Amino acid sequence: MIVRVARGMDLAGFLDLAGQVEQWFGPMVDDPGFRRAVEDHIGRGAALVVDAPAGDRLLGGLLFGSEPPLHHVHWLVVSEEARGLGVGRALMAEALGRFAAGGGTVEVVTFGADHPGAEAGGARLFYESLGFTPGEPAPAGPEGGSRQVYRRAVG
Image 1 (cartoon, rainbow, N blue to C red):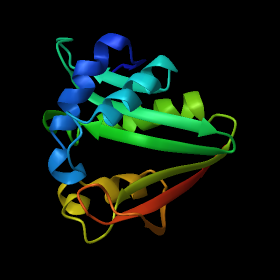
Image 2 (cartoon, rainbow, N blue to C red):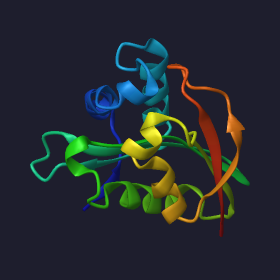
Image 3 (cartoon, rainbow, N blue to C red):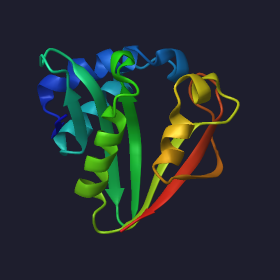
Image 4 (cartoon, rainbow, N blue to C red):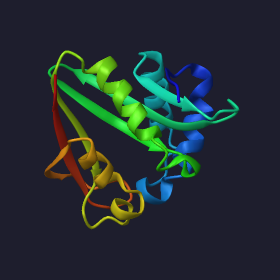
């Protein structure tokens, strides 16, 4: 599995991935702010992707931000077909090595314990398996669901 830096042509793939998780995150595909965020991350070289073996779609994507010593996973999604196959782990490993190698703390805001996506999507267990620990509650998501900060020290 190859993780690579996203290019402008990957925007459509990011939007396809977003469409697969809108039930948990609220509308994104038609949200100009989401589109701008993806374009901005791609333009700064802060977006990573994994292509399907045929190269015709994305299996996963990640948007990252760094202001050392604090780093942020802004968005991570794995396609329905590739969940459980290591795509998310590969994206996180590349992001931490590429963007947070100097050390610090990595934060991600994920579903609160009572959010339906917490169990169905496996996000909380995924981050915990990577050494992240739960922190304080975060503001609710656009769909009204609960959120929680997770953190991990790196370096």
